[in-house]
Length: 562
Image (cartoon, rainbow, N blue to C red):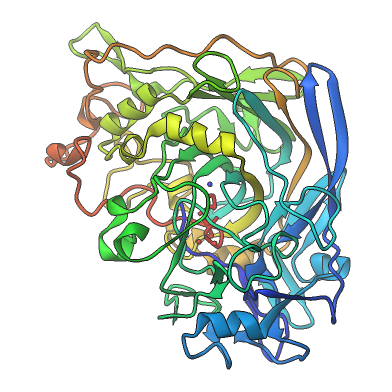
């Protein structure tokens, strides 16, 4: 799930529905009734069972009020009495989240059932103001007071879904991702009486500070408004919410990526200080989570004609597509170590292999007439490929510092919650996904251009909210199961790729090739800056502060993303 805090609810006036998260639970004013989706679980090819699962919206999107009254505890980007004094325990005891009926899911948040899946609308105007985007979680059944999150254990398994992405333009992100949240949403901690049914307990690898309640207390210590948020709705507190994150899908109609983000702490972890790895303190690479992740983004890898809008692309986002992600263990068993993550596509009845990375196959290197394949070259993620990508693009391999695929796999064995979000990016306007970024680099340098979007003003939240308010994304046919079991025509594939020799030559830094894999890309004199030894600078270059409300900011993920 590239994150910065993008809590995307912008409610104004005297509305009762202001972005906030409380720890009590009320259905006094509205009975909770999120949309129901169908989830297929497959134990063999063609042998699947289907069950209804209710979605719930994240607690940060809900109205929080004093118990038994209409009085807000949070409004705009400010805490109100009894939460404006930094006493997180008192705030959690005296305030509660309100339920949302089906009318509010549709009218306030733009979330509606669609063909056994879900449709999410970008901007939603209603009688109380305007809301932007949403973040949803899958419950373990159809709801109720004792509902918990459905926990997905992906070792030696695959995850599949259908997506209709054609309306998501530059600067927008429709994300599907796994995060190691607690099954009860943290209901066993402190004063959290709401739990999973109310969408509590969010965390991701960006360690977002905008999660308003965590560990059963309000995150109101040192709370301040987010100056980048033009809607006057977002803020950040003292603590961050960290956990392992596996971004299955961060995408719009122009570009896409999938990215594992391992952390050194298991499950939900409330961070403070340096362990949060805050960008604005220059501590990105000192935190407990890998914020960059190891991303496989087709366009960024140099395959700029693989995914996009129009018949000239192998995957045409004007049409429905099927995406399958496979988690490959070293020994082919559920207990093995995760060593590879694969992607397979299907569109128009045709199974399509993921594109190989042109930037890691370099012509006329090390001398004219020769072609050099960087270590791990192929169409899937592995530790070898991640190492080569960082060498090629000049990034610090924080992914390996936090244990790489092995640690990510251990987290996935413990179980993850599935998050589905739609968001925009107040920090860097989603340029890490679909434009060229960082902006002080040449677009021709390998790894800098991530999509065809111009970036800048046309990707800012202000612009996309005004230009594309009614645009939607649709996700259907969600399935999980054994390798080769969820999607007709997609088989289990070969055994895991083997690690290549430790003596394999390094992948040359960007100056050895341009966007077409030929010589002559960059004239960057600071080649030794590459950070592959872990001696990087501030590290603000790559995927700086992403999403969802957490990648939101997935908090951004995915988001985010925060």
